[in-house]
Length: 148
Image 1 (cartoon, rainbow, N blue to C red):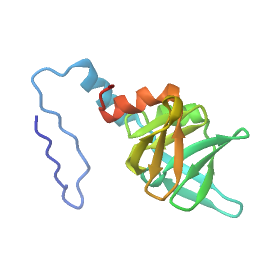
Image 2 (image 1 turned 90 degrees about the vertical axis):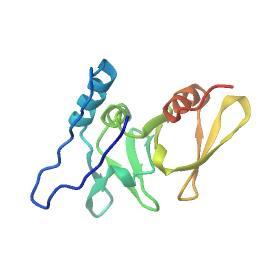
Image 3 (image 1 turned 90 degrees about the horizontal axis):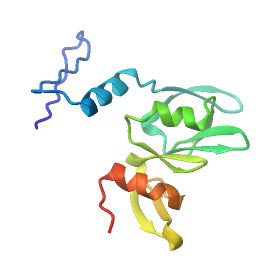
């Protein structure tokens, strides 16, 4: 399989063309999820409302019935439940890492094992977050890492 990415002319609309002999259910589900993904977020701080780019979010964390989006060094409240964000970002590189946290896999620098089956994700901004034991398998699957 080849993947070709071309830049459109300045006034042209972005177009995705899939050329395959027989599209399977996985491909169709992925394309539908990608097309329907709502990736626009609004963040709130004490004194401002900010348009958030999901690609810049390191992780989302639920704390005291509020959900926060963590950037490199800023934190914004978002008006979604954690499970809603998880559903929104299924086709993207976000994965649940605990009951209260979803992490952007693009922001993980490396992983290291911890005791009792947990893992620690070292993020590109220097933060460390713990991947709960029950979510390690899902993270490894998304990364394409084989169980030993």
